[in-house]
Image 1 (tube, rainbow, N blue to C red):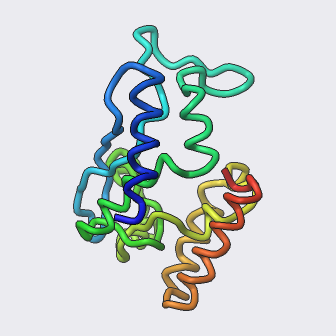
Image 2 (cartoon, one colour):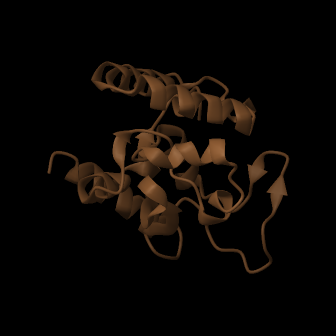
Image 3 (cartoon, rainbow, N blue to C red):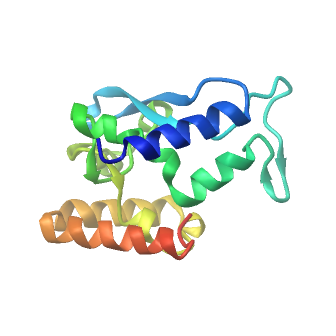
Length: 168
């Protein structure tokens, strides 16, 4: 209820600035390998000619989408996933089914906890420079250390990363 004005303004910004639906829905894998649909505000437009990556990034990302991604507002609808029990506030990010198909037994450990909106990786400066193995190490660290204190620290670190424009 408190966030409903922000949801409404964001939905209007997405809907009025580019054609298509307001939400992006995608199958992800959660706790114990159970599939679920994750929700995000749509930040990209469809291109009939396929993916185009330019020096400045993916040209399908809309101007509003760039702002939503930088501020993490595109992930607000995942609160629905939290309410439904598919996700928690903190935990490893939920992988795509095609990623899980290639997991090693060690990587499968990521599926032993409920996936989250944020994690150590998302609060890490220059997170996109990390390798998958470094990302996995952070997820396994979370699984070992998880608890209320760890979750609060990660939530605060994520807020600081977003405020500083880091890790995005």
